[in-house]
Length: 398
Image (tube, rainbow, N blue to C red; front, side, top):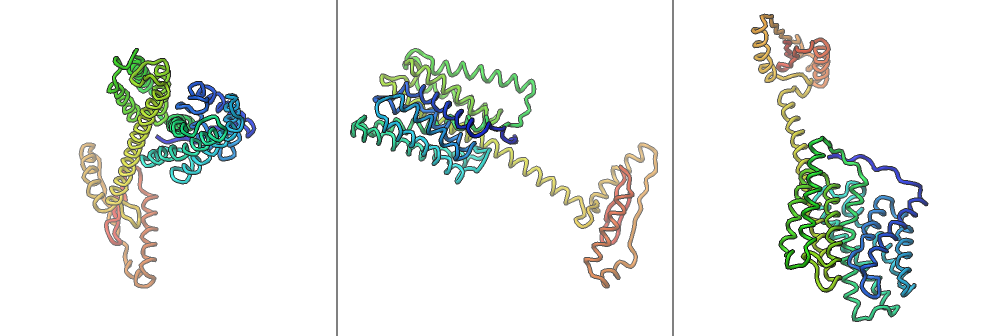
């Protein structure tokens, strides 16, 4: 499936305003799940929004990330100093991720065409998330909002939340930003509808149970066949969307204390859940990339095979059919002529004194003569006739 060019963006001030608003809204919702004093949370989709914005808009989009992050963290009202440093960490996280993705994955869409790219993207998510995870809790310790002994706990929560946010949200935004040329026939639309309903029911079955005893951890693997289904039958956009839907359902029910990841500590529950969802995302994207690589390899092999077949049936100098093709064509033409009761003519053409051209002017001049004769024959034959270079300076017409 090929990808068309990106859709147009609004002007730069509008881009910054929309990015800041989106980042702020997602951050405010995520901070509702933060551990004390209210900055570190296991659910942080803004990290994925920031990285996707940098990749789509370029590094000049950093003010949108900083403004959204600063506004959201200032609303916690515990330490303005920490809030501003955290905003800088979130911005540097997005900038670092953008630079690493462009350096090691791809400099433009599509970003997840190869399994190698997906693996590198996951690694980059972890590396860039460490930037914000270090500056954020570090500033909180300096401001006295977090004790030194609690730094590692805040760091781990911060890092998992940002890493999962990048792995889950960034592919969703990036794949929806590109138009995928997929043939949406009636059967394909019906399959997509059946897939969406089945996936929603499976997610509710896995994560909507009342307690962990009714929703054992092995049941979570029921989600994997649906990721395989999407990878083989749809594009990476559908894979990323399916996982995002599962994540939303899982987070909602885990917060309510339902599902296999529900524990006494909500933060620990979300950390385990997001680690699982991130693994599913990576698996789905790698499988989808592997399917894409297989399809591209198959198409390339088919093109090579077609070229080899053409070369085996065509004279390389003149582009006419060769002697082998002449024999096959004559058999078919003789059969058609006999059934139709029509005549069949075979004309053999030999260029007299051609050896003198090669001896006097060289073989390059001789090749030009042969090519010129071939062009004359091509111009004169009708549809259904055949012009052939029989060998050397000999030609045939059927």
